[in-house]
Length: 148
Image (cartoon, rainbow, N blue to C red; front, side):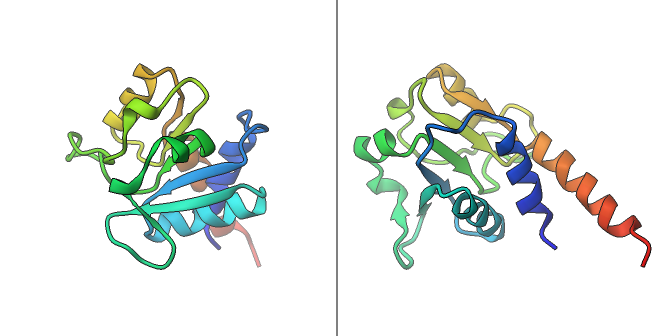
């Protein structure tokens, strides 16, 4: 059972994403797989962004204004910005972010990463990974404490 899926899906259900049709998923690791499944379930098309070219993903350096106009949900599924490396952040063109965007950072420590701070500066709605972590913990407890 994947608690990442449950935690991310439950958090998305609490915010208004009715106008979201496309998303950028930063990173292609394990966490991004659960994110992709949730987005697919919700019929949100997504583009994967990474440092190296694999399959149909987009390179960070190739992100442009068209991408940001179309993809209003931007999800950081990388560990960039996680304590103790709090000075790291995804290399995206933050100048293209505006108040129509939602920036979702799976990182929860620190609560406010540079990714989140840059989103706030641009007027975007921001979400950190704390609620997702809480929902994951609840689901894990439910699964582990179930009697057969």
